[in-house]
Image 1: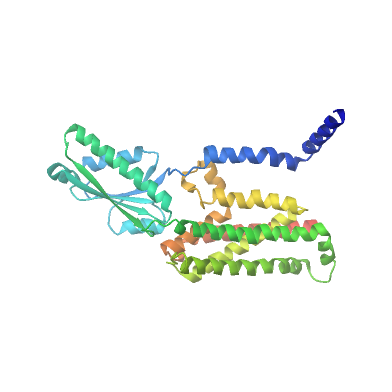
Image 2 (image 1 turned 180 degrees about the vertical axis):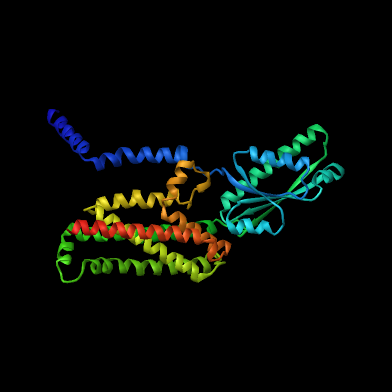
Length: 368
């Protein structure tokens, strides 16, 4: 028994001395339970609401105030002209538009009926369905208040219209996220592991001792993964369009250019990770925690970014896949042009430049 306890004690010492093991055993469960328990939610909060109200009477004001009082909506702008309704979706400044008819209060008092149109961005079906439910519930509660006061037979009828995805197909939402995840996996994780494998086996030193310049050696290592990523991109787009019937509403050349930019960025991230670690286990841990988990949890692939706490929204801004997925949704689903994805392109370009500079600097330091 004493020998057994001695072995157990020795194993405890090994675990405590290995900081990486302690991090895996204690850090990851804590991080996941906090993220899933408190931070990440499928509920819709702070959805951006625009209102077109030609009536501007006391009833429409009461309804707008109830939307503002809800935790699910934020009133971002009041529209003046009808043509602005489509513009707010194209610019990406609203998730839902609430449209009142003319003489709303007058119609409700005289005829007992009035309609409200809800135009919702349906690119994310689950979020759109929840927004529709929350909005209709607010309208129903206000209708009940009126019925209890002085309009017992009144009825407010919501007319819901889903833009970009009228049938509410979830595949419209997941395809852009899958593109970001697969490209991150192939370019980032696999590149870092492949380069670290050369360092771990000692062949990297032999390659660097050859007459070829180190930059050419690294470039030769990542070119196959670049080609594989391009092939996977083409495969995903073909299958999405032909089998899953996901439309490519925007410019295919623009979509390809943005995807190539993201591939270059993911490769530079993978190269940077490979410069920081010396074995494949560390590379997988760094890639998994630093790349794959943020893509799945913080990029908007599964959970809407707008519903996250402010701290996580700031952190998600540093996740490259968030901006790529956002740009792909705009191009594929909404069919917007270059000027509407310039923000995402600029951010991805800046991130790629930073990681390339950091990778080259770190690689030269390790080489020296």
